[in-house]
Image (cartoon, rainbow over all chains, first blue to last red; front, side):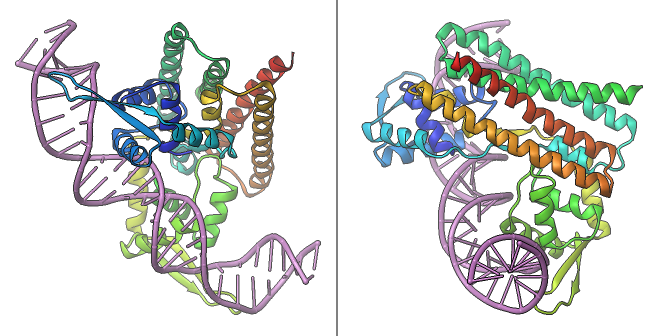
Length: 172
Length: 172
DNA sequence: GGGTTCATGTAACTTGTTACATGATTAT
DNA sequence: ATAATCATGTAACAAGTTACATGAACCC
């Protein structure tokens, strides 16, 4: 699962510009993938040069022209092949857990702040995901897309609860 | 949070060889960080050249000599500085969720298999983490280290439950 | 006047992955 | 026998990050 795959996946839904792809990644898929322009534009160029996607230029005034990309037949084949291939293990890296794990010298004050800060982050993520869910529902979500959001929310929620429990224990 | 930081963290606990660091990463910290030899050995070399760690060679017969590394004072400072710095956001990448998200053409059979396979994976992870917890407890865990395991288990458990619920709904 | 949105992109760099290479010892 | 454990490492490569560069339009 690389940038390439997710770009193909997004273009599989509909024609998109690099800018839109970035937007989707940031707002819609950020709970299971991250991407930046530095990845998106070079990937689009490469996919185009390989004939996986084709470009349609939309001339604009006052802004750079839009490059609207869509999958070619070959691109759709690659997407299908990816979707049929073995599923990779999930990748999870937590700087927060590392702080806990190696923080031998964390006093109660510092630990409290660390936990509180992380609870805040979970809240933000839950908020974003909940808000977005509402918006997406208007546009129509597939059953499996809804599953992914439920999965994401459950994950945030469960870890938040653990943190709250630990914070409570600490305070008593 | 990079390989460098986690290597310093591990060496902060006690002297270790590259081999042992790999072992710890694989068996003890795999639920929040991944590392390979290809990262570990070059990182150790670099840290040594920068004076962050020092090497003690243990001569062995029939095996390569052991290189036992320990933090220098400078290395301990860097570790502390890291531990005081801002906590990075957690990174989560899920190929599984991507398959769900872009799998418009998943029929019930394929979806069932996808969900069942992912439930299996969660079980494996929960098993490993539970087993390891027992072993670590014998060696002594800090309170915060125990927290990290609880966090990890809660995460696996919550997502597993979501998958089981979805599978049940699918079958009915 | 200042921030956000739209819209493109590149170049240098960092980081880590993959695959390879070696080889004795010990457990099954 | 054969697999696993101990123990080191490198070289080529892939992938993505960060920082930079440009600039009009629009909203507050």
